[in-house]
Amino acid sequence: MSPSGSPGFTRGGLTVHREPAELARVTRALRATGRKIHLVPTMGALHRGHLELIRRARRDINSVTVVSIFVNPLQFGPNEDFDRYPRSFEADLAACEDAGVELVFAPSVEAMYGTDPQITVHSGPLGEQLEGATRPGHFDGMLTVVLKLLNIVRPDLAFFGEKDYQQLVLIRRMVRDLNLDARIQGIPTVREPEGLALSSRNAYLTEEQHSAALALSASLTAGAHAGTGGAEAVLKAAGEVLATEPSVKVDYLELRDTELGPAPAEGEARLLVAAKVGATRLIDNALVLLGSPGVSEQA
Ligand code: AMP
Image (cartoon, rainbow, N blue to C red; front, top):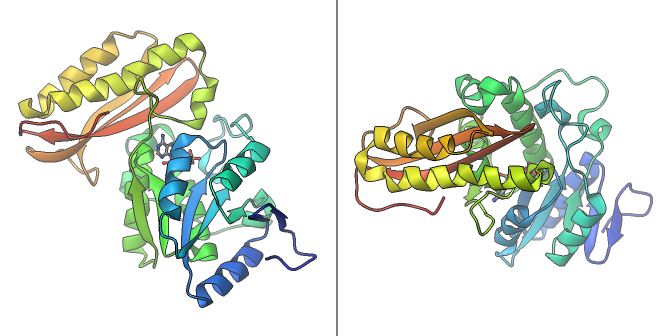
């Protein structure tokens, strides 16, 4: 697929592109043949959560799936884990190949940002709440790289996990507010059998921390079960579970509406939690039905 001399390389049925302009050329040519383009942005260290996004992207047989693997420096704060973020490029390529992915985009930081980038996306008031309150600038950096990826690939459909719920809401918001063309597909969170949401950062956890971290998903399940009692009951039930694990340092536990505005009195709401377990910051969330009998999804 890549002309000789291009920075891309092929491995089995997979072509890896390093240069934005080259990938843009390839996706444009594919689109001209009538194929749909599906995009799955990731930071690599692929796990079953990422693979579920890929599986969903590949379900449409008329589509070509592009998986991007790029640890985006712009979305990490100065004291965050950019340098030690897990990187497993060879294993990621093998996983993509096994999953039937045709195109991987793995640019260097220089290829992605050039030498003197000046313009970024501002994530607005929602970008300063929840995750944004603890991670200033995180969502500006995330939206900037997502906008660049959408502009390079021009996907018909881009896939993001509900695991990063605020990210998903902000991306939908950017698409609406900036009149972007792409459609955004949210995918439910993939979990370990015991409930812990899969995350590349779970690799940081010791065995003991891993078992303490189960309190996050357990708290969401307890909160969801308390939905009939209303918002206060949900927060109380979830908070009680978190309190059973003193090593889990809660950053926030909040109930919001599905767009992350104030929680409604009734109907669909989102319960979101962030906590530090040792030095590792974990996030999780679940849908909660308020004021009606019945629980939405398993947390
Ligand atoms: P990341 O590599 O962490 O930036 O994640 C890339 C994409 O995978 C994002 O859209 C995440 O929301 C999604 N993702 C991460 N973990 C999970 C999970 N456990 N289940 C579903 N999607 C996930």
